[in-house]
Image (cartoon, rainbow, N blue to C red):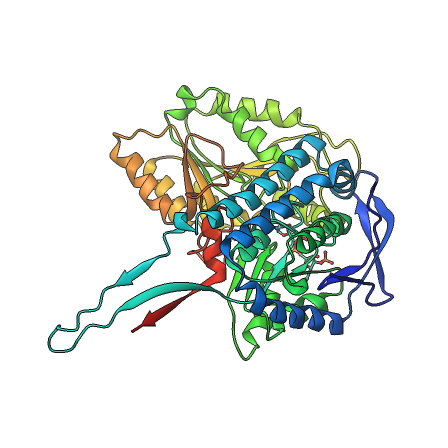
Length: 498
Ligand code: NAP
């Protein structure tokens, strides 16, 4: 039986309309609002969700790892049971291709199950246990017995990301990591997929009942009024925040957090241009490289956080590379972006790059509908890149900038001038070359994941993954949002001494 959408928020096991203020989902494919109405939650109900999370924390933190493991498996089972309705709803709200959504849904369930399996093994993979023996005979003072434990931090606020409606949204990585760590979650749904959020919430509602978990362990807030987000991060019960989105919104939320009496950690995953370093020998040894870079950049129509937005290529010997870029990009079909706001920002960014005297247009794709985004690749020389701050900014959508370096000294200057990035790749790397090793070393201080010979898109969910990076790609360089290590951001150390 299909689930009926209400447009309501979910607070501690109950569905609430909140205010009479309505908003609507949006169909990128039709470029018009969808019919289903959703309602802004009231600020009083935001407070109620945070109080319920605090109440639930006391019972939830005492649940065994086995019980939490079963809960996460139950959530994954219930997502699976949503079947085609979930995929159809998300497809309507995002216009992301069905195959991509199926893959992302599978990854999201695997992510929940990976945390569940780690819990079933008493979190042995995280290697949390640490103990020092007492030495009563030590001189001049006896040594105490000390043991390091890890406690859940408390209720966590999670903001859904527009570009990964499953993997980084309602029941995505941050929610899974927080629940695994023993923290209740108050989730702020993204306006780009409110129906998807409601269906996902129906899934966790069933899992909560099936596993007899405290009702306030999860709440989901619908709304487009910005005050909802600020009330949530200001709530004294909230002890950490997970966010994926733009620098502007992250800064606004951080300002509110800084004004709290008790300042709390904010884990923001923000923009990144994910540099691709093409070393001279790659131009000969990797004849498919230009097509591969174009294909990676075009994934999700450029709306991947790991999209390769900056390609550093040698000035000499790159004619064939550029020819292939022109062929791939001019043949690339245009497509929709996730929201009208993201489309507006993309069009503005392309206008700025087109008007910028430092850049040349290498190639662009045809635009088949006026509300589509078409692929663009620009180029500039190294000095222009170094002198022009605009060229260092992320363009969210199908766009990349080629920067041509004359020698390895210039390449190293460019890398040194980069801001922090989620990831970067090196193509044509020679392990025996000292200069290639220098490139690797300098680049490793700019990124959270450094890749040899592969494309940056596609983030494996595994224990050794790091998805984060130096500011501004993320707000805490020490923390990952992907993989079971992500639990650490929602735990805190406690030393027990005796
Ligand atoms: P966003 O701009 O960060 O917006 C997230 C949500 O916050 C939107 O619903 C937005 O509402 C709301 N908002 C706007 N101003 C706010 C404020 N002052 N206080 C509280 N909430 C506020 O993210 P987005 O709309 O999903 O995407 C826009 C940009 O974010 C992209 O162009 C890209 O640069 C970046 N992004 C990065 C990643 C990544 O993985 N690193 C992922 C997604 C997006 P409105 O829509 O009504 O403005």
